[in-house]
Length: 96
Image 1 (tube, rainbow, N blue to C red):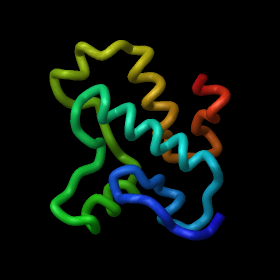
Image 2 (cartoon, helix red, strand yellow; image 1 turned 60 degrees about the vertical axis):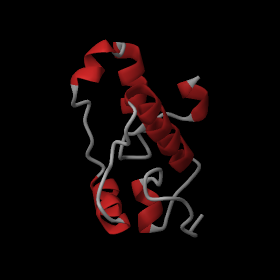
Image 3 (tube, one colour; image 1 turned 90 degrees about the vertical axis):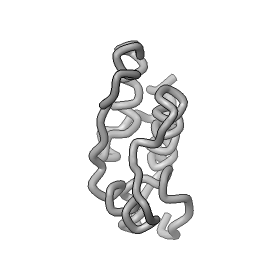
Image 4 (cartoon, rainbow, N blue to C red; image 1 turned 30 degrees about the vertical axis):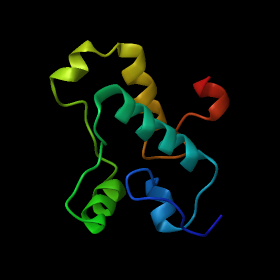
């Protein structure tokens, strides 16, 4: 796949580069799970450009008090879904 589709909050870093597989969808699922667990996106910014720059870096964290109440297994799943390296990212089958 080579077309770039998606919204800045949910788009995988490799989509921004232009070469990606179905693993980009697992990244998006990780972002959705992150938001569901803590109520905010892992990447934020005042503009789309700022958000995209942060997504490209692929750096995010479990900062904030809310994460102390989240199970280790939920955090582990988010980490494995939002692994910047798509070859190390969970597949859909493995995520199940």
